[in-house]
Amino acid sequence: MNRPEFRWTRIGMLLGIFILGTSSILSAQGNKQEHISEHTLITRDNWPIKITYFKHEGMRDAPVVVLLHDQQGDRRVWTAGFANDLWGKGYAVVAVDLRKHGESKLETTAGAPSDVGDLKPDDYKKMVAFDMDSVKKFIFDEHTKQNLNMRKIGIIAPEMSAVIALNFAMIDWQQMPYDDAPVPSMRTPRGQDVRAMVLISPVTSVKGLTTASPIRIMRNGGLPIAYLFCVGEKDTQDNGSAEQLYKQIAGRNAANNEKVFLEKYPNNLRGMALLGKKLKLEAHIEVFLQKNLLELTDEWVDRRSRLER
Image 1: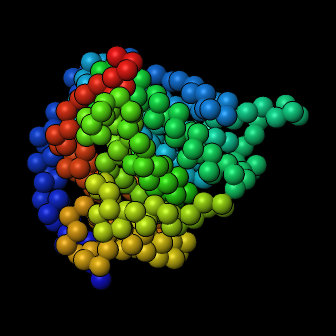
Image 2: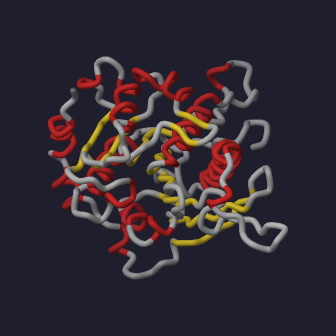
């Protein structure tokens, strides 16, 4: 069995330096909140998706972190604190309400808002195909305005949304480039942007959607993505899902995989309940994102098709 506490020493030894040495943009800005704005994204099936955006004006090399929520949750679990902390470390941040959660609801014919109680199997598939697609288009627009670098996208997803995140990352890496150059290597890519994923108390399936397809192409470093799995060691609802996903993606040589990590916390807490408990979860996430997102050397390039520039 992999010993995550040992493996984390290779990243954790940088933790003190990271906390003391990283200059906080947030502190430099004082208490100003002009960098925070709310937006409504309309999906291709005309569903309103509410997001909160933490913007770095003119910082075109800033990585972007997409924050998802668990079932019955919403983006406020992030916007109350941790999203701003990430912004202060130099990340653009997009906190999302997936359909039928938070403020991403439609009025029904009876006048009541649709909510998580109405979730159907098809809704989970639409979260991947439509909701996350609209978020990616928003990131593309901000990339074009040179406010972030979409080549460095991270996703933090607890519980239910881990299934959404893994399937979206798979689709993102399967996107074909624009047919805008005679040589394939010169064509402008439309995907291949998700580079780091933090999955907190992840499940392996929701109604109508599983992690089976993503796992098949992500196994043994099949995609250049870094993964951090976080779980309460005594979480009675986990049933080994986090460790199962970790082993499936890390492959047979899990102990020596430098891109896939499993961190267990000594309690029975689950999902977002792990945050704010002085378990070093937030610090682990920040160090993981620094090494696997902030320090990426992928420079900003124009992602519009050459035919549209």
